[in-house]
Amino acid sequence: MANLAAVITAAKTPIKVQEVEIGKPGPHELLVKNEVIAFNPVEFKIARLAIFPIQYPAILGSSFGGTVEAVGSQVSSFRVGDKVAASKNFSAVGTQYGAYQRYTVVGEDTTSKVPEGIDVAIPTSLLGNLPTIVALFTGRAGLDKPSFDGPVSAKDKKVLVYGGSSSFGSLSVQYVKQAGYTVVTTSSPPHWDFVSKLGAVAVVDHKQEHGALVKALVAEGPYDLIVDSISFPNTVAVTAEVVAAQGGGKLYTLQPAFGPETLPEGVTRVFESWSSTMDNDLRSWAFTTYLPQGLSGGKIIPLPIEKIEGGLDGVSDALDRLQKGVSGVKLIVDPWE
Image: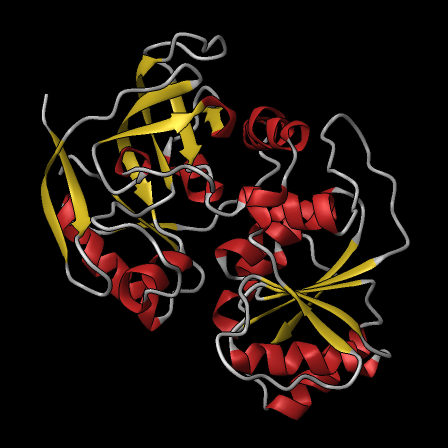
């Protein structure tokens, strides 16, 4: 069986589809025959802007799903033939771990079984952000985990998630609401219907003029936690002012400032590679309990999914779309087309 991959040979160079070796799973790893590859915004930043140093040639991508083709010698939770969705571990090094190919190696600790009757594309579309969400909100910010076992008691805390129609923001709003917290978010009007179903008590139009937007967000506060799921300079300028308006504090972001930045006095941008900070117990809960239970019980609402045609040749098109800006939809490809 041949393995094709979308390979980037050097920083900022075009992606080429070529034949590569099929990786062999280690003791605690699986080999997955991919049926779905999902795209995350950070991937165009690595491919097009080279924002992080990586080894070349590289096979990018972190979210994929399909059928288990082989299992390592010490794997006990999965077997050949299982339908799974998986996420590349932050610390994994080697082209065999990249999602942009037909066969990918992944650790069993970042793999989730797909519930019966659920399209594999749905959990795959969520896994690019799930580790970051769990690590940030629960691992770092200390919020309780959601539970689907019964009614959740309401907590006297309010959270602002800026960017509720993004893939990170939409799952974050649900996660925080499911844990019993009050959530406020933002969206442009075309996505209000979708975002309003996620559980936020208020959805603020982020297309407003800067001053009006800040005023509207401040009016919905004060907030115990503010997270900017977009983290571009223009959004940080807004969310930082909201933090400042309530006396200063921390602004949690998904990326660092890639240049000189002046924040209001008393405001601190907090950024880490969030998924790498999650402990083993929290990771296990996210992949084996939260995601399967949330999907099988209809408790998690995924973004609408849009398939890019052309198989692995469509990877470049997907990255172009991400670079131009994608909201309210999750892009995927089928590597076997």
